[in-house]
Length: 163
View (cartoon, rainbow, N blue to C red):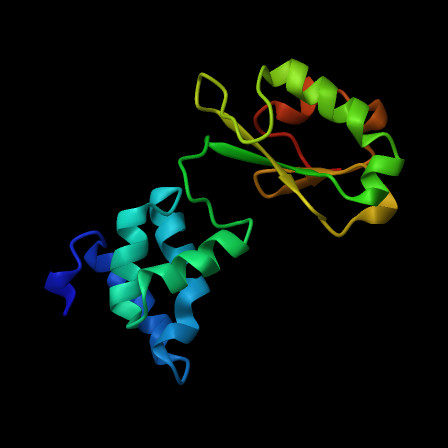
């Protein structure tokens, strides 16, 4: 079967098959399979959707529905670092709009865009689960909170620790 799936590397196929072996139904590994592809490629292309769907014995449309439902599955290329900016009510009440505008001005991009140097992609998320420390955003895997008085340039510098 693997020779019918040229859009996936042997390593990706092996990792997906491992996940499949842990559950009773092949299609139950859909999210894990998408995350595996994204970890290897940075995002999940249409060709990858078709290949993963074939491997999991499901339709590409069904898998695409899963991929587009989850906001941490990237269906287009993203920058080296993804900035997830929380746009929940809690953050909005704590002046997230002014922080968002400073971020847009600092990066020169808006939601859904990537900086020209390919370093950052800015995406909205409905909640990051840190409402008590709003407004918040994630840069890569690091959560930054209480952003109203922060220096965004320092948060975007490589090697910065999270708040």
